[in-house]
Amino acid sequence: MIPHMPEKLVWQFSKRYIAGETMDDGVAVAQKLNAEGVEVTMDILGEFITNLQQAEDNKNSYLELIERFTKEKVKGNFSLKPSMFGLLLDKEVCYQHVREIVQKAKDCNSFVRVDMEDSQCVDPELDIFRRLKKEFSGNVGLVLQAYLRRTFNDLVDMNNMPANGHPLNFRLCKGIYIEPADIAYKEYQSVRDHYVEDLEFMLRNKIYVGIATHDKYLVEKAIELIKRYKVSNDLYEFQMLYGVTPELRKSIVEQGHRMRVYVPFGKDWFGYSTRRLKENPKMASHIIKALFFRG
Image (cartoon, rainbow, N blue to C red):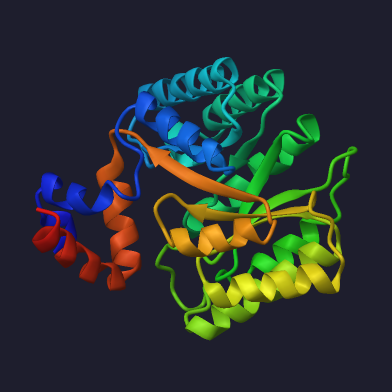
């Protein structure tokens, strides 16, 4: 039912998890989180575009955002989805747009992470990352999804890439896209187990990892592994979505671990919201409460 609801209705729920529609909204939330001792990674919403003019517009928005972060001294970096730069329309055009953004980040002493999307995008996104890593070793990272059956092998394969003076830098998440069973693990605990397996490989091999989870079980497992392998605090951070499990986030920060919050904003918030809701039906109860108790 969610995609057919009026946008204003869905917004009553979504506004707790999205900074807003404008860049000013995104920057304001980032500054607020910085004041709480938390860094950010910013995501402009708008993946799966339909024409290359949209790709150009999205690139320019990212360039402007990086400029604003630099000028206003916001502590954070940037996440982007290649499909919003034309990955499924023209791979080379997409690469050139993403490369320009990473170049801008490098010029501003910042960092860009290439988000991983659904299974049709995985191979071309790995290719983009490999090309960028050769040129911008310390300024670009990638997301890996633990629920994909291929991820551990991809991880082992990329660990053989030349370091060029900087460790590999990955965000590890469970994964949110609906995929068939031959592509992705479907059982809840199985996904958890493979998350831990991937994370242990990264920590053991001194790969920088953004431990992206709201699962207390996985947070506890991660802290166990960090202690077991005596991992330096400059080789990992925890990451969470804006507005999700703030109490768990606070407890991680209070234990002395670095935290980064993923802050999405933009006019295309509706698609992001409905996908998140469909991937997590438990959120329906929050929507009902939002409607009846928050007007």
